[in-house]
Length: 199
Image 1 (cartoon, rainbow, N blue to C red):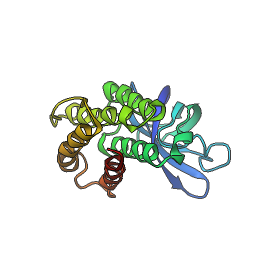
Image 2 (spheres, one colour):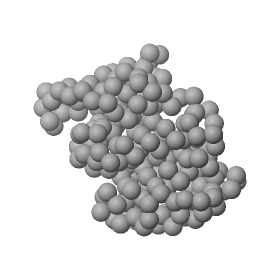
Image 3 (spheres, rainbow, N blue to C red):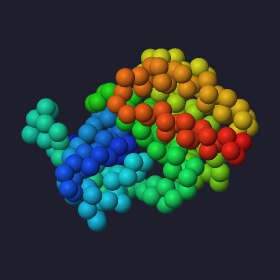
Image 4 (cartoon, helix red, strand yellow):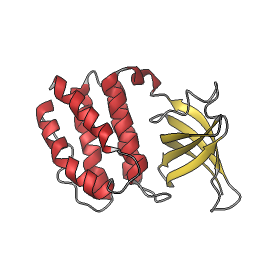
């Protein structure tokens, strides 16, 4: 297997002293895991951050082997990770994607929507500008995976967006995140709490 594609890094877990096992969402191939040698080193640490857009090269001798990944930064989300609200939103969106999607099944609509939501989080002047995009992404994910997802991107004031967010909490937990390792929903609860403070 040899492929090269633009990707969004959605998860990174330390492996050994300096390597990282990362998960990438691509337009054509869906969610793919790869071994990034030196991912915790000085050069690659700023690249291997969930939310970053990267140029991904994967190679493996067989389909059953974890591919080796070479990554090159295209767009960094690092500057926004110092702010609690954008950091919580980026963390939730990437954790949901990495946890809920099956491996190697393309979801081009979700790839585009995640990229749009992350861009909105990073470039909107405040959470009022991106919260509805994030909730719309949650609803789209439920629909794409076959679980309905009432409505689309919510419109209106932040309080209405939070209401729509609350309505999606149970389907997300029940359908997408039940029996998953770790408590991914706690990242969403933290984000909702931060949004409520400014609503």
